[in-house]
Amino acid sequence: MTPYHDGSSTLELGQRAPAFEGLLGTDGRTYSLSSFDGTPLLALVFSSNSCPTAKGWEGELVRLAEDYRDRGLQLVIVNSNNPYLSPLDSHAETARRAQATGATFLWLSDPDASAARAFGAICTPTAFLLDEDRRVRYSGRLGDSRRPETAGRHDLREAVCDLVENRPVRVPETVPFGCSIVW
Image (tube, rainbow, N blue to C red; front, side, top):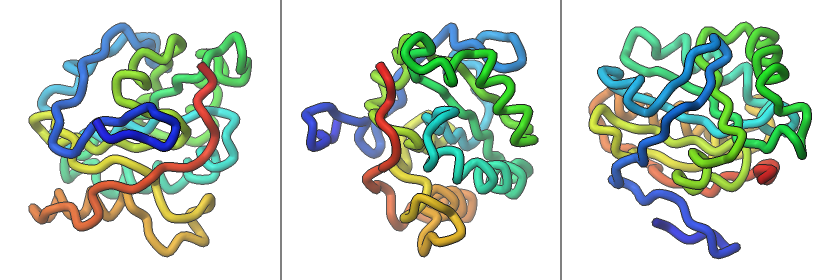
């Protein structure tokens, strides 16, 4: 695991993603990592309903999922904020947010932050791009700005493009920024 400045750590490149289970989706079903078996690329984005950076990138995530759906990408939002300390991040609010964005991808609630802790996500948004063997091929920020329209780099999109084109990810790791996950 790669250490952050605060002593916590995140998964290292090439490391197999940790299993998670029992995360409630906005569709009412529960999910585990194995629920996505057979998906060539899985992008897990740890996000929240109240972080301005996360909210600012939602439209870009919708476009990314649409652009690469037919090329094997499944994008999943994971909200790991404690809903008791951050009421805007309750499962009901997450379902409303998912519907408001018009996203066709899945949103999961991780209210005890067990998935976020296992992956080493400490802020929102943080992305982990996993290959078919569920090894980390990219981890970090969505882009180099708090708003996609001012970004010079769209790091997650570029990583997805590299993998879809069977190239090594040119920038496989970046430092995420945004709002701290509310434990």
